[in-house]
Amino acid sequence: MFRRAFWFTAGAAAGVWATTKVNRQLKKLTPESLAAQAADKAVEAGHRLKDFALDVKAGMTQREDELNDALGLHQDPEMPDNVTALPGPRRLRAIENDHTTHRPTFSYDRNEDH
Image (cartoon, rainbow, N blue to C red; front, top):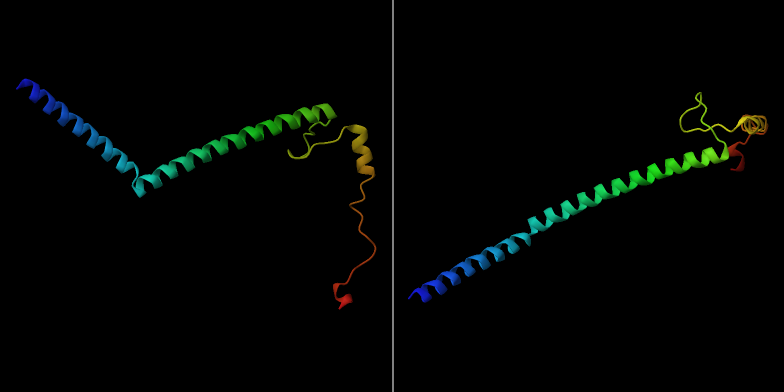
């Protein structure tokens, strides 16, 4: 008698356990749950991508500073942050050879060709 009661209880417990497991898996496969999982993965990937971009930007800034030091390009406090100044003699030569401020003497009329 006790043996039958033991196996009956063990079977009922196994059935409850299996039913619970199956129901949990079925809930995970509903469209709402799948959409929520996909959204969580997308947010996670976005965070990883943002961290990667910040690491790349920090590496680029560090390498740019290394190259500026190696080339002798130093930051002039009077210039904006995104512009680096050339060292003394090269800067003067660059300013002397700057022809971008001169306007050409010819004019072009767009209606001329029509």
